[in-house]
Image (cartoon, rainbow, N blue to C red):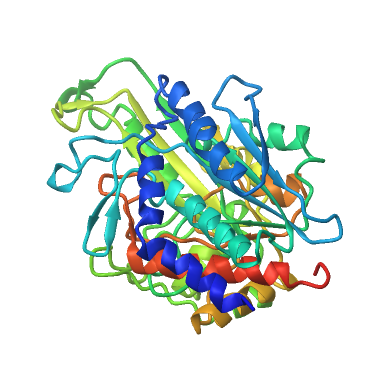
Amino acid sequence: MADRADAIARAREHLHSGAFLAELGRRVGYRTESQNPGSGEALRAYLVDDLQPAFAALDFSTRLIESPTGKGPYLLADYREDASLPTVLTYGHGDVVDGMEGEWRDNLDPWQVTTKGERVYGRGTADNKGQHSINLAALRAVRETRGGRLGFNAKFIIETGEEIGSPDLRQVCEAHREELKADLFLASDGPRLSADRPTIFLGCRGGNRIHLDVNLREGGHHSGNWGGVLVNPATILCNAIASLVDGKGRIRLDALKPPRISNAVRAALADVKVEPTADEPALAQDWGEEGLSPAERLFAWNTLEVLAMSSGSIEKPANAIPGRANAVLQLRFVVGTKYEEVIDAVRAHLHANGFPMVEVSGAQRFAASRTDVDSPWVNWTANSIRQTTGKAPAILPNFGGSLPNDVFAEGLGLPTIWVPHSYPGCSQHAPDEHILLPVTEEALAIMAGIFWDLGEMKKVL
């Protein structure tokens, strides 16, 4: 009688046979650059010509949902076996960032998969075509092993606008709330903690962009004739920023800090080590919030980063005091931060501390969200991964970056579990994006194990 081990072996064989890379190569070939205004046809074709037939082969019903704001379409796929069984909702995105042709090593073509050693190169291999392809392949392995059954109900939503900020994902999910009802949200995106350690993360940090502008006058004025008697906007701006974050990256304004880290989050991160590989930047010493481990700074605390600054011309500096200075900062924040009040708090702080000439505005805000670390789904998923791999997965309360998790955690009210299949050095959003063959094989096994275990559940957690 076929069992869990058979399903996992079948998933692994899908890679060994070359079938998985053939599927991934076909999907990478769609130039689904959502940031490119001319990508609409490719975005639609990816869903209609590739994913719809793939889901139909697994007995899913599918339908295309048009974007309410004129962006790329969505695909909803639904497999119902029995109303009494658990239902899992999963997610992926078919769009990618710019291909950056001509910038890849050895002049590789970003629109085809190329295997070199343990690396499989191609745009979307890591973000996110490779990851949702792994989950689909694992689902198929379980279904074939069970003789055409899954043992649970499954739903997918695939969007084509994640790389432009998922502009209407929440609206689409709200409009189709009944169709997306589930007991668990389980998806894959982003990197593991490291290539050799399976990882679970429960949500993501949010982000607030803060624009600081000092616009004092038109043009520059000779620094010899005016130095010492004319206010320098660049000097003002540097000091304004320094009042928000100090020279060691520590936030100075309390309104930008998160609540105290809970004991449950500290316990989850106690064995999490942030260890960059040889081709990644080394961790800074004595940088960031005092008294926190690197894992706590990255996954449980807020950071204020200067993304860009401008004043005068750095390429051709003139001997003149500039008239303007501008900066864009970003607050990355965890759940519990009063992010709606950030812009007003920064403005009030600067005005109260002698910088009323600094104009403060906000842009590109996205929320933080996460499932509670104590959710029974967390231990259930960790135990499944441990049974498959023999490794204790890293459990991160949230991903350091951002994903549209709030749509599912808050909008749909679901416990959210992310099991990423990439790794920090994958070069997503850059030339040479790739996945690793050993991680891919382990990921196929992990997901086959999780899907098998879902089909063995007697009741919903």
